[in-house]
Image (cartoon, rainbow, N blue to C red; front, side):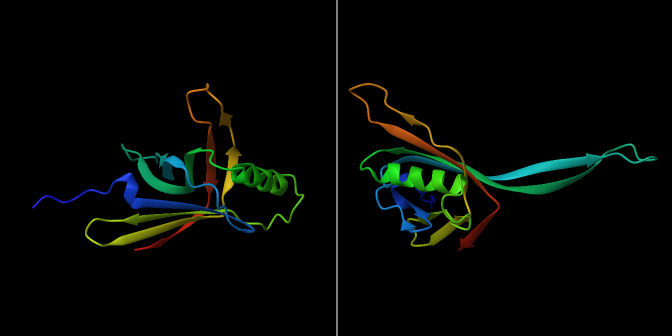
Length: 145
């Protein structure tokens, strides 16, 4: 029996700001998340091969969204205010991704304490949607499996 794979329509994303969910950031075109790893190598005297260790460097990701309301600009302002210390630096941004599998199983991953690399926006032409990219990094995630 073939296993049914999950499709994008079975995934839900929610960006959460220090004030609660970013309600208007829901026209998400694509989402990527990466467990950032690094391999350390060292060679010792008397050994003819390197020894290796892998080290976790946190998580990174990005989401491309289509603007559907002015909520994105509110989100952008909150990110800027925190970065410029206009609001308490303790304000936390999270993103939660929920995966609803065809067999009824569900997995939820929350990337916690996001820091942002930039929030570019693109207005390509009159026949295309206005889009923005949210690029982030964080140290931890919580998995509910």
